Every structure is written in C-alpha cells, then in structure tokens.
Image (tube, rainbow, N blue to C red; front, top):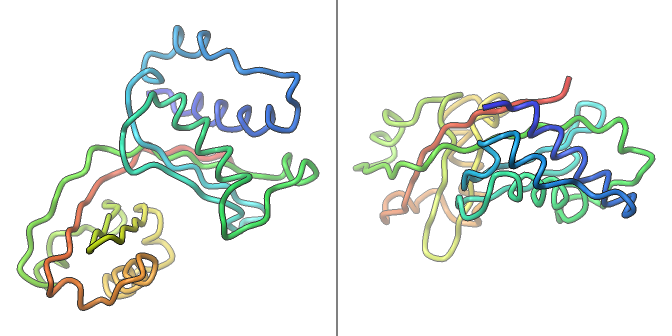
Length: 183
C-alpha cells in the first residue's frame, strides 16, 4: 500500500475546503492506486507545532479508503469538537498522520488481568464498547499512556464509563494500523 498517497489525499481534501475552485480528481486516484478503492477504516490526526490539533476517524470499513481519508481529514480539520476549525494561516504548518486500520478482532477475557495478557502495547489499538458507549485508542496512544493501567483507565474515561465495566462483560476489540505521517 502506498501510504504517501493517503497523505496527499488528506492534505488536498483540506486545501480544497479552503479553495473551492479546486477539485480532487477521484477517478485519477482510484484508477492509479487500487488500494484506495478498498473499503477500509482510517483515522487522520493533525498536529501543529508538535501538538494535536485535530483527529477524526472511522470504526467501520464502510466506504472506499479514498472517501474515508478525504472525509476524516476534513472532519479532523474542521469538525473535531475538541478544537476550533483550522485556519488557512495554520494550514502550511499542519503535519498530517493517516492510519489505516486492520479488521478488528474481538477479545474474550475473564477479567482485567486476563485482558492485560492479550493486549500488546504499541502494537494493538483497542476499541471498548459498553452499553451504548464506544471509544478507541490507536496504537500510537501507547506512546503517551505507556502502562496498561493508564491506557485502559483513559480509554474508559474517553468512553464515559467506569473501569469496572470489565467486570460486566464490556466488549473489547483489538486492531493494528498501517500509518504514515508527514515529518
């Protein structure tokens, strides 16, 4: 998979939001990069001066990778509720990271200790589902939350659930990512 092309799609999707006279030629991308027509889930993260400036992604591989990256880049730039929309003056300084998710694997576990044995730090991204709440952390989050306890506790907070949810059969899925980022 040519991941550099995903960065190109992400950057141009944001730029064409600012300059509506430009249009991305989807047919060109799909005819030259077969992987862009596969249904895949992706996440796009934006950083400004080394700090997160926006992030948005998909859980489900429900549309073509081209569309998923295009939409998630725009949502990371303009619709992440944690940040104000980016402005054109910041656009050239934004660094983009695109992560393509592998299919999810449901983890069967007995308790939190058993779960700890089944999740590999820095390799696995984790999805937590409990009742009607859902959250995920990409494998890259292990760089900031380095212990299992920090990672899982923060994931529970993100989902808005108690860490006791694991005693009540919370669903846990793992996945890996293929990623590329601008330096």
